[in-house]
Length: 299
Image 1 (cartoon, rainbow, N blue to C red):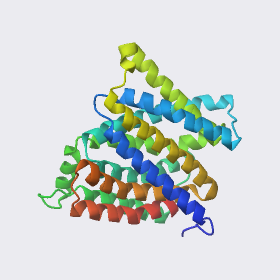
Image 2 (image 1 turned 30 degrees about the vertical axis):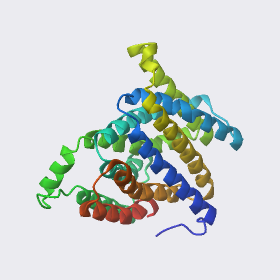
Image 3 (image 1 turned 45 degrees about the vertical axis):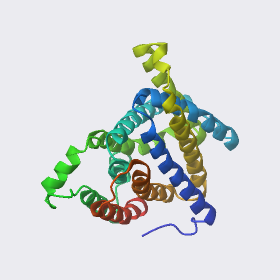
């Protein structure tokens, strides 16, 4: 069922784990950005600070090709990315990391379905079983401390969470992104695709801010500087490590490390830095999702 073979070298494992830890750290820094910095302002500086990292990667890789056919799928990918990032920041500001980040386990599950529709790559039976595990884990995650296990009670618990609606939007958009990325990479190298996306997103944020608030809209609150530097450093590092890991092993293996470590990281960081409760349902839900993710990604 699993096709790892000899692709999991020690360096591939180390790079994948480092990538996952860096992404998890970037989740913390995104939540730490103060509300005084609007999502669009935070993204403007975040994308701008990440761009040099991607430019360096494109230069080091030695493959910087991009063709005119990239424009349409590239713009579509940028629209998806901008919407997802705005909604992500909104969600983690409104609700605990330990309740929001685990929802991203639905991304590979929904991607498997969307890839079937867009690319004809339908989920296998193992992947279908993994999707059921992920859904069951999310059910457990949102069981309230009082009120029982009734599905309607769990649904109300999910619906009452202020960040649940925007994070649902993130799930849908990031599930659309991988198939579109795959199309983009037919017309650009990996490094140039990443750099082009950051430039488009940075420019869009800047134009929006200037159009709606003028030059003063670009002023960053002092309290936002350090967390945004943290976002840029960790997200930029994570992306570079992700690209390196893709060269060593299967993309699905890298994604498995990212999502699994992300689940655990959200629980630990939420407790350590934001005083979020660690409950039995959270632990059980994350454990069940961790069983389902390998089936979805590697099945």
